[in-house]
Image (cartoon, rainbow, N blue to C red; front, side, top):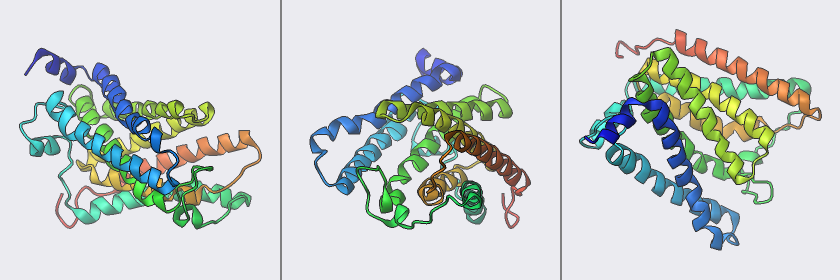
Length: 282
């Protein structure tokens, strides 16, 4: 193993920005490839973008990272890599699926309830089953397809490779917090695609808190599956529960911060009290 590989493995605070930068590049590349095809119908454009990303990210996370950079450790084969990032531990299936669904439901209801109580929530099933809309950016039914991408690859990246690097260098608590911070800062990528700066800052805060809870979940249960489940379900159904318009922007920000703090607290309590064993099997 080269000195460079050893340095990358042993200095996660240097390695993590490098990984995030490479990840950003792989996510933005499809936009360049698809520029000549922007006149295509929006669903086809979304599908093309997703296919490009899935191919590129498969190469990134199953070739370049484990065998090129040898992260999070030296890997002889894909099985070694999957073991090291806790990707191949599916059992106990019921526990892993249940904890992921439960945390996603907490986030979704924490989002929905304040809007419903204020009378500003608008139930519109077309937000998740309607046609994708280029003008508004609404994904419609494509939400169930496109959100597979972040649920799979962001979890492999942050609760897999990056969290393992941190756990090798820091205590569990510090590793969990740093992992969440890295996940939050990763979402600054949205500034490169024209997102509102203030909304992006909120997204960084939201993603940091979410990342901390998902990292804690992964450390406790030693598998990526619950985090992937929670991530996917929340992302896919979030357009349905957040379909509200609050006239006071300041109030909206305050509500959003409170909501994040509430679901973060409830998430920690859920994971803390959820038994590690399921039917006698860990």
